[in-house]
Length: 115
Length: 114
Image (cartoon, chains in turn green, yellow):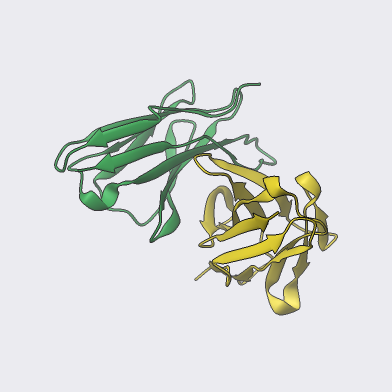
């Protein structure tokens, strides 16, 4: 079974631009979560999507948004990029059913550099 | 508020020596706890998890962790470290009942001396 894939793996943008990152979950996984990893703040939860609906949201400004498609693929968008948005963005997927759910499996991440 | 603390930022051990990485959590109810490992340039790999039951949990790669409610700890151990274990280790707790929403500690970087 293929793992979680994220594209692109590396991105360089300039301040003020916007960026879209993509995540394809493991087949059968309907939940996708996004995390931001920086040296200063560590790993921070951005949001979780399940069946095309945002389930949870972390404490990030509205410039950070996401969506999930009917095939469970997810995208996150950051508008008006700031230098502090430079980070590794990790996507994780998990299996969820009505009675139980599973742990998260992480992708390799997208390294975003804002100049 | 829930939180996870990993007191050691960086640990160096000799190959073959035993290892213990510390993790303390703050959570009102019984927590769901995880240990993940991250190699350079890679995503996170789940080592083990604790939900309930036996407080000593076995994971992959020879790792184990012990949940101690009285100490609010979930320390990771390995009896004999291999050079390939050099990586960063993260302890995490579920927030709000959803395994899709984890609070992570700041991580402990493990270096292994030959």
